[in-house]
Length: 356
DNA sequence: TAGTCGTGGTT
DNA sequence: TAACCAAGACT
Image 1: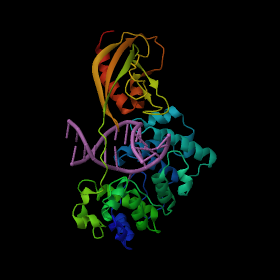
Image 2 (image 1 turned 90 degrees about the vertical axis):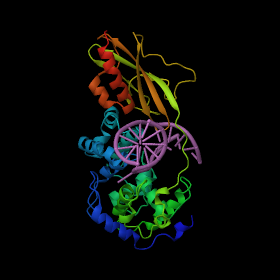
Image 3 (image 1 turned 30 degrees about the vertical axis):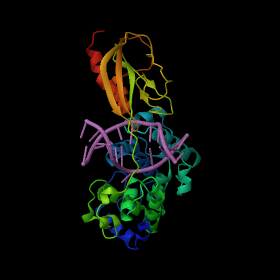
Image 4 (image 1 turned 135 degrees about the vertical axis):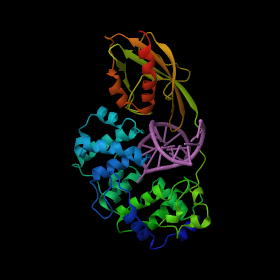
């Protein structure tokens, strides 16, 4: 919409920063407004964890990672399996693989120093336009135009941008660019995102206490909650699969490490088949080895980004000497992605109560 | 460019 | 309860 071109006035960044100075949230990875920023390592770690992830979900993982691997060199020296297990439950596991790859590049090739430019940051694995801008702004106080989901919403409303996403992205970015100040860009970036997270919320924005209520074109128009408009999403299909739960008499459970790429890539899992798109059409998965497999009559249900999964659990008790990647159930549970945690927690009691 | 890639909280 | 949504990147 053309309205975007006229929206934004000189005082807006300052009004937002004043609000941020008074109401900034305390977050594990954040320095208080006006104080020196955290190390780039901490900013990078938090920003990767926060990709498509809520503040509440990322918090404990950030604390755990920073405590376990205090510097980028520590993380770079970690084993792949250690890092994947520590990431288990947070989702989007390609982030963990890229996190480790990035740490190793920074540690080995850059002497442990993160680039301070967006272009330099963008060259790192797992660092895209948003994350590069966020690190440049927050860790190095460089002027960078930070555009995440919060900023998209705030800009669409301020500028009454009625073009639906993703077509509206260039308009939104242009407006975000016009508003980004040269002073305190790091605090400003966090302030806009805080505004979107706490005031300019998707459903019921608190316009009455918004520092930008006066210049907001959508508020004047009366329906800020209707923005940003978004293209319709495709319905999620339902997929069916089988997971095999082999319980050894010493209590250990058979696990497998999934292929590095694709769904749950690189993660520990129960052996399974038929659901992740890797099987040929019509193929039926086979159990990991011959045993007295029984359909436990239990289904683990889980929804991924683009499909619903119903995972039927088959189980078998196997003798103590059985070879394979068997692991103690509690340790396995801790290292599993959520869908597999569900399958284990549903299937194990049924199998344990069954006679061998 | 459009599809892939997790999870949990909120409504 | 089902849909929506979150500090996106990669192919």
